[in-house]
Image (cartoon, rainbow over all chains, first blue to last red; front, side, top):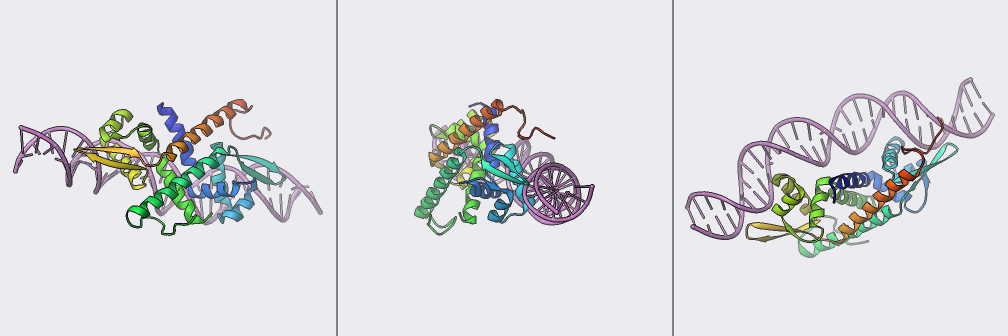
Length: 112
Length: 112
DNA sequence: TGAACATATTCGGATATGTGAATGCTTGCA
DNA sequence: TGCAAGCATTCACATATCCGAATATGTTCA
């Protein structure tokens, strides 16, 4: 695997790895949304939401569509959601393993 | 999706999102390896390799097995590789899209 | 035109992260 | 024992990232 590739790859991963941006992607998971809808759903400030949306846009993770004064955002590639879900599974299995072996490093509730 | 979950999730993603750690995971992709093998394969310093391995270990991404003075590292959950590959696909498709579309940049608004 | 609304950008300071250098542990073996 | 190999940790500092506040841009409609 070439070094350059790891660089681009980790760049994209870093873009996806922010908690706030993940909350945004969660809001966009099933349908496109305007900025104000995302603001309402995530509870983040408008400016901060816009900042994170700009980062996602620059990385090509989301695309935009303007309608009047509103801008609709949508996830460009559904594989991003698949990757998100895979990591969710890893997380749950890791937590399950930790509960089985030793004490409580992470969250104590084993629910979905 | 609870807020806590996004936090844990992004924590794990951040752990995976470092270029150096990805190079390490690349070295561990198909088989377990000792630290010195990883050092040789990635070209990183021993200390820095160990630093990143410690982070991966703390996140539960890799597990260790000692044999004499050597420590073997392996990826704990193959889904991590699957997620890595999914992001690779997204990356390639994004690059392909950018080449296909007219503009060289990112914004789809031609007027100004 | 200008006012009102929706969204985007810039700036500055706080916090987090990554790094090399130096050093500390284990383990095996003479 | 003591020493060397293999690995882990700590420290100090540079860089990167994040966020709120303020402000700018862009669009619609009277």
